[in-house]
Length: 436
Image 1 (cartoon, one colour):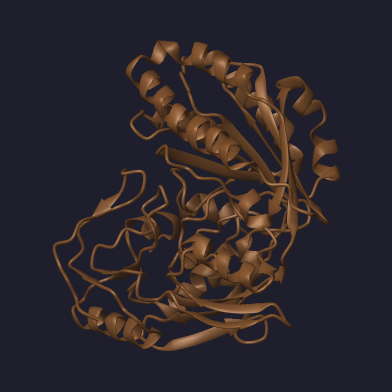
Image 2 (image 1 turned 120 degrees about the horizontal axis):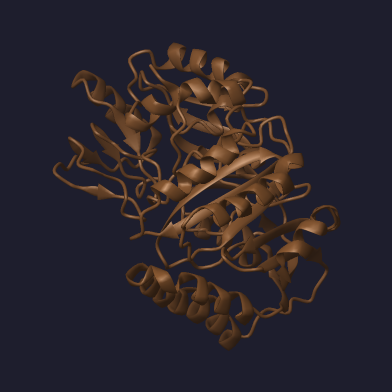
């Protein structure tokens, strides 16, 4: 564990950066504890980064930045119980391959797999699901280092309040060093993707939600066009996309061509409506089946900025209609599709789906485009519905707002006061969302 200073850290989107006092790459939980105690001696704060896929300042480290690359071990795999313990810095794509090698899988995932397991968990990363919830609901136990440098474990049976608080703790209660996942036997998913008009999607939304294990859809702003995605388990055999079809759809069209489109609309915003119309009409239906994580996730090379809110599921259709009406009133030129997903209720105190079945509405802009006016307008709609912002995606909410929409928010802050009274794990973002 050798400290290095004067390194500038930037996130994936390029909208967050920090030059910490020193950078440390610990290789054990004990070394994390030593780094935390050393930081306390020097009056410095501590944050562990992941791969920088948060758009908020969640990972910004002003004092000591802990790099995750030294904590990537797979500690144990129990195929009988499905319990798998891995260290915090292991990327999700590596976890997925390890699980698959042992005939196991995560029950649900988000749509990318580049994040570290701890980074994804601490920001409550989720996918879409009728029955299977997000990452926070698939954890059996956590190992974390507290502000005094001690290493503790927590689970449903051992320190259950700490477990429910820390499963989506935004790194504010301690540094997660290992996660025990509750996995399921490996399974195949059949993906059915179909273009569909706005009115039909909204009219059939309840039908799609009820009939499919995983349903989501995208709407192309300024058009009538959208894309529905239905993923359901099948027995097999797998019928994956051919190598050429995968390259054409998921690499060339979804990334190379889409990147060129966004460079064009960035330079000439007036082309956005026309280009979106072409994109919506160019979408084609396709169906294939493959290993679950290969269906859940897709490559994403076009950089963007994102905001996402969770609202009560019953408010989804009214919220979408209001959002579309807002486009008619505002002079926006938005090239990225709007993504809609759903999730069952979760127990983690700061999960965006805590205590309620939730719908998620995510809006994006090309990373070089201004986002403030667009995101602010959408945020006004979401907060009027008691929306909860994704911890890793851009928003302007503070502790005064968040305590109104999270029933256990006060309990979380009280536990934080107990465990980290000196705010060893604070940064500007945690000050915004949790207050001091």
